[in-house]
Image 1 (tube, rainbow, N blue to C red):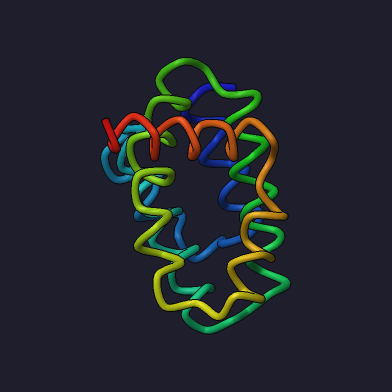
Image 2: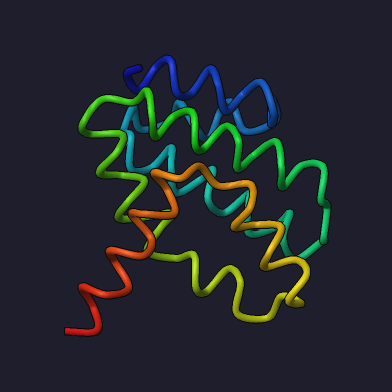
Length: 116
């Protein structure tokens, strides 16, 4: 999956982001916009959209090219602690249960890498 395909995938959930996603033609910007939207859903405790969004993020990560994977690791995964800092334990468990095993591994690797 390339940038254009990823944008189309994100737009299936959030069609109102179309203009913001296509502004820069940059995978990092697209993942940042998507991450910001996921943060908003977490703050609003919109569990159905959280599930759908994290499922989509997992799909983009598993099927994305190297640039998309790098953008997800450096944007979404990097900000995940910030996203979940003020969540209830139940919400935090929901978030991590909706993430693919690959995303969870990337998150764990990043935590241990920064702890060194």
